[in-house]
Amino acid sequence: MNILEFSSLVFLGSLLAGFLGSATGLGGGVVIVPLLVLGFGVDIRYAMGASLVSVIATSSAAASAYVKEGFSNIRVGMFLEIATTAGAVAGAAVATSIAPSAIAVVFGLVLLYSAYQSGFSRHKDSAPGGPDNLATRLRMNSEYPTPEGPKSYYVRAVPGGFGIMFIAGALSGLLGIGSGALKVIAMDQVMRLPFKVSTTTSNFMIGVTAAASAGVFLNRGYVDPGLAMPVMLGVLFGSLAGTHFLLRVSTRVLRIVFAAVILVLAIEMLYKGLAGGF
Image (cartoon, rainbow, N blue to C red; front, side, top):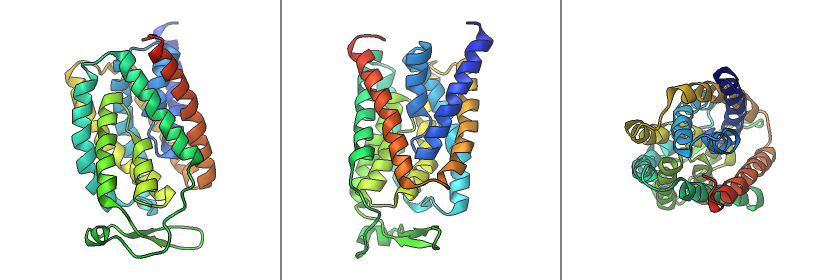
């Protein structure tokens, strides 16, 4: 396979990864890293470096549309970014000094847990009741558009969500992803935001988190421009398509797609990591 063929295939794979990442709020990195490692034999650290660059592009493209539509909760996103950025810098420093097989195993476990939470949880959108005092003080409660008109919701458990976001940031730096899966779970399951608000706010946040991690990878020489360019362009165009898809599809469909894709990737990453395939 020559360089042109390799870059074209990477671009097409990244296109699909960007579509899934944007439509589910995961970010393209959660798909593109296993794809590059398992499908193209790329060193996992270079795959993570290219992924982080693409995550920044994805977030920038998708977030503007979601903010304009009124889905993203900017106040929640900016507050939680304090935790994710600190975690991202710590995680990236660890990632550049441990064995690739260990990274793959951690990656697989994170994906497996995310698939379980998305596919089998019995979460319902924010239930009626009194608002959380801290969320009210920080003016996080808001509303989002529905076919029946704007629907109000309350934000809950702010300290718990903040703590999980630090872990999400650390995993972002450790695994080279936007860590959208854990961010969506924290906002959806713990802070009780509506699912579409969680996915769109996650898209708004992952670019900032990835930028913090990418700085460490760039400094260690794990960002290859020849690999990062087709990945970034593919994920960018795929994310634009995914943005329009999200606004027209049901939450149930999003959860099924989310769970199915990452379950397959989790099994592959765990098998390769435990078998010493890296």
